[in-house]
Length: 358
Image (cartoon, rainbow, N blue to C red; front, side, top):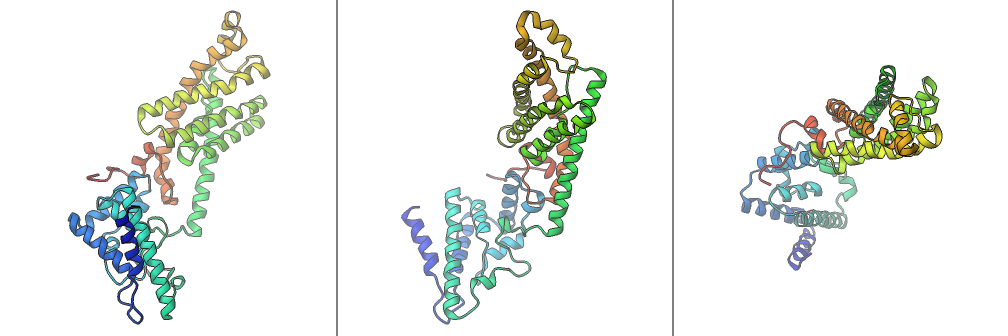
C-alpha cells in the first residue's frame, strides 16, 4: 500500500466523532470519499447498481444474489450511517473504475472506520458494535454481497434437491448401461448421470453417483462391475474440476470430454487385463480378440477401448451438459448462493453476463 493509501486509511480511523458529537462518525469520511469518487466519474446510482449486478453475474452468482437495488447503492452514499457493508463498498469502488487493489483498500478503510466508530460508541456509553450487528429491515447485512443467510427451510429444500438429483443420476447411469448391454453396442453410456452431477453439483457429487452406480449395479445386474467404480470416479473428477477451471468454451468442453475418455481408459486398462483377461462384457470383446494376436493383450485392450471410450465420454458429457443446463434454474431457486460453471451461467441468468463498459 502506498503512502497516499496509508494516509487515506489513517484518515478513516482518525475521523472519529468528538465526545458528545455523534453526528460525524468515521464512516462519514468513507462515504464522503465515495461520493467524491462518484462525482469525479459521473456515474449514476442506477448505473453503479447495474455494473455491480453484471459483475456478480459474470462471476457465476445466481440471479437472486447478483441483483442489487438502486436504493441499496444510494443508501451507501448517505452520511450518518452506523453500519456500512464493507464488501458493497469494494464493489462500488470497482463499479467506479478502481482496480482490485484500490477496491480492496476501500473495503479495508471501511472496516477500519467501523472499528473506530465502535470504539467511540463504547467510550461514549452508547450502543456497542455488537448491538448493531443485526441491521434493520432494508439495510445491508455483512454477509457476502449483502445476501442474508439461507433459512433452515431453504437449506432443507436444497438438501432434498441434491439427494433427488443424485438418485436420479444413478438411475440414469443404470438405464444407459442396461440399454447399451441389451443392444450389444460397442459403447458404455453408463456415466451420463455421473457427468450431470459433476457439472451441476461438483466433482465429488459426481464421484458419489459413480460409486453408487457400480455398487447398486452389483446387486441388480453385474457384480463384476464393482472395480470399475474407479473409472466412474475418475471421470467425475475430470469432468467436475475441468468444468470449473478449464472448459469455459464449447471447444474446450469437447476437449474435456475426450480427456475424460483417455483418463477412464487408462484407469480401466489394468482392471480389464488383470482381473478379467481383457473381457469387457460389451460389444468390444470381438475387437479385442481380433487385435490380441498382433498387439498382445494390453495393446489390444487399449486400442479397442480408447476410441470407444472417447466417443462414449463425449456423448455422455453432452447429455450431462444438456441435463445440467435444464436443472440449473431449479438448482439456483433452492441455492441462491451457488456458483455456476461458465457453460451453465446462461441457463442460470439469461442475458449478457459481462459488466458493461469494463
